[in-house]
Length: 81
Image (tube, rainbow, N blue to C red; front, side, top):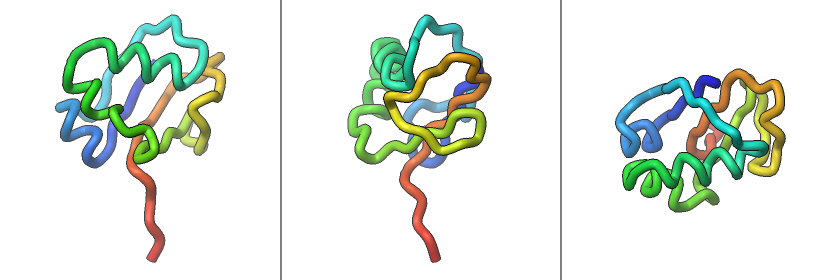
C-alpha cells in the first residue's frame, strides 16, 4: 500500500511517500510497525494525539481496518479559516 506523510511528519521521516508491505490489520498496527523501523519513524509517531489519518482519502481512526485499503495518509490536525 502507499503510505503518504504530510507537513512535519514528512519532515521528520524525510520522505513524502513510500510503498509499504505490511501484515498490519488496523491503522494502529501499521503505526506500531512503522515506529519499530527506525528512530525517525518513532519520532514522527511519538504523539499520536497530533496525527490524523485518511484511508483512501477518507478521514478515519486508528482502530480502522486496513482490509482493501490502497492508500494511508498521515497528517497533522487541520485548522479552518
